[in-house]
Each structure stands twice: as C-alpha cells, then as structure tokens.
Length: 275
Image (cartoon, rainbow, N blue to C red):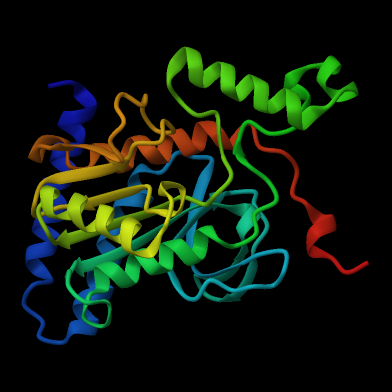
C-alpha cells in the first residue's frame, strides 16, 4: 500500500473513533451536526492550501438560491457574501463543489428517503445557471491565436483532444456534488438506486452526484464521467470497496478540483450586476 493510502487509512480510523463518540446522544439533530463537524475536521486538515470551505447557500446570476448546503468548497480568493460566522452566500461561479454530510442514507420512497432527497438536491444544484467552467476555460493559456479567434470553439477542441488522449475531462460546466455518509446502503444497492432514479426521473448522468462515500460500508462510488479518473468503461459508476481506500475518492477528487481551479477564467461580474 502506498503512503497516501496509508495516511488516509489512519485518518479513516480517526473518523471512526469520532463517529463512535457521537453515537451515544439520542437527539438526531445533535448527531447530524456532530458528524458534519467530523467531515469539516477532515477537510481542515487535508484541503489544498488554495481552497477553503464554508456553509450557507449558493446563488446564481439569476438570483436563484440553492437552499442550505452543509459544506461549500471554494477558492480562498473567491467572491462570497458573509451573512454570519461561517455562514455565507456563495455565487455558483465561485463554487468548486458542495459536500453534503449524512449520518445514515436511507433508501425507499422519496418522502421517507434522505438519499432520494439528497439526489433531488443535487439535481436542483446542477440546474442552476453557471457561467464559468471549472477547469479549462476561455483563457490566454490557450495562446494568442485562440484569443484572436473563436475561443469557445477552440477550447472545446482542446478539451476533446485531451479526453481522447488521456480519457479525462479538462473542465466541468456543472457544479460537483459530493455526498459522504457514515452509514448507508451497500455499493451494489447504491448503484441500483442511482440508476433507477435516472430512469424514473429521466435524468442524465451529468445531473447526478459526482461522488458518494459510505464509511461503514467501506466504499466510494464515483460518477464515471472522466473528470477525476480516466473513463474506463460504459458503466455510469466506478469505485472501490476497500477499508484502506474509503477516503481516497474524495481526497483525490478535491485535489483534482484544486488543480482545475488554476485554469478558471475571471468571475463573470457582468452576469451578476444590474445594467
């Protein structure tokens, strides 16, 4: 096992210990808050230096609001509107990802299933208007020739070439949604629930969660879209079921976001301000 996996395995053991300490209170709200704080502790220790996180709501250039989000990841230099201590309104064009924390992911009918409700929240987030890409954007990194020409067409061509050569995506035009739970369905059940949701709601893969981690079941499930890892099959989902690698998916995904953030364009002020 490589050093990164060993490090993450140690962190997983620490999270398991914290989880055990929060299992005694009888009040559900207390447990939910405690486990959100555990995830925030993990982020505080492991986020790349260029990134930060907060809680609050996301809004887009049409002033649509997301509803309360547990954790919003953004660049340290990103625009946000402070509402209270550690509570902010963050433009979707400043948002690199959302992380939702659950004590237990329950399947079943929508009204009784926080898993289905979480997927609903993900779909709503991804339908919000985003004006700038995460990753390769219409920037001068593409060269003077591109600046003079059709930037959007040339950017798309470069992205297509990168995907063809490496099997990875150079940019995202929808906001990543990451779901982490301490308890939940097995990996096989989770894949079935996600695929059934897509079929019943007529939802494309782009609108689904990008990463789901279930700690007690010792797996992570990654949307197979070629962003975090090379797309290797036609399956909608790929992942690992291994106690030693449970946190590897979210750790790697966040670092890919940090790498991609370096290539983003300027904040689209003209979309957010009245004329």
